[in-house]
Length: 323
Image 1 (spheres, rainbow, N blue to C red):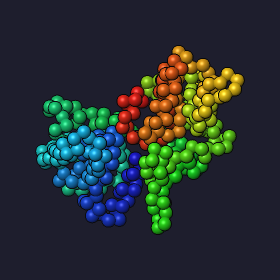
Image 2 (spheres, helix red, strand yellow):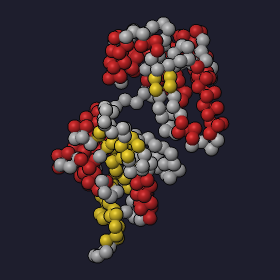
Image 3 (cartoon, helix red, strand yellow):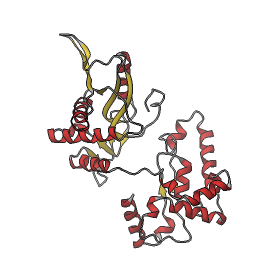
Image 4 (cartoon, rainbow, N blue to C red):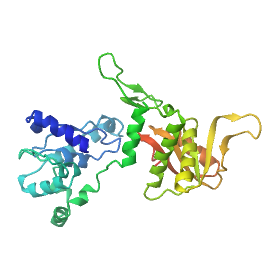
């Protein structure tokens, strides 16, 4: 958020007119789980302008696309309705947002109030009063990166695990993912290919597990083949070594073993156990659904999923039991 402040207000200081015509592009509304009301509240100016909302996926996947388009249009237009009488409430909401409160150089112009709040968001005057008295309450809903998460992003980029497309002339326009989707960025955990990198990666995953709220309760760490195998091993080791949490470790084979005891699973017996799945990326949830199918077939209970990158493609994942 601090970086956003610096970039945004630096551009506005170079060209003050930018502040009056700046539009926020809010992708992810609808199909990807973004909240339309929150987007409108945060970005609309006093004229009801300043926000672009691409919702093609939400409309195209609706049972009745035409009706969904009309409903979204009506909600956006309802959010654009405001009067000067709610200025006090607008100011209260602005102060409650960390990106505004923590900035020491905030040249707000009276023609534009970011963090615009609408009276329609509150059911009665009492809630409006409470919102003014406790401006920090709204700030608690803002997601901020924890130190280990920031370190993980820097760590991934330093190992060229997290890559972005080169949009310069002749550069790639997108990456093609396993799901056949196109993306402007790519995360390849296979490039964590040295012992020191795996050791540090295990620490990041373990930190995420130990910081989970409510706490994750599990007996076994499961790494789906193939990239999940070294991840799961690193996580299980780190949990025991640094957090005094000694749990089992298991993984699956892609192909059945045709000698010895045979079977698809290696490691800890899963029957009756609570199992935490560890993987690198979730896009459409295909690999995780397959992992859950394997676990349930073995009589285990999926306890959760820990991943490095969530592409936030939420379609059908909850229907398949992935939360």
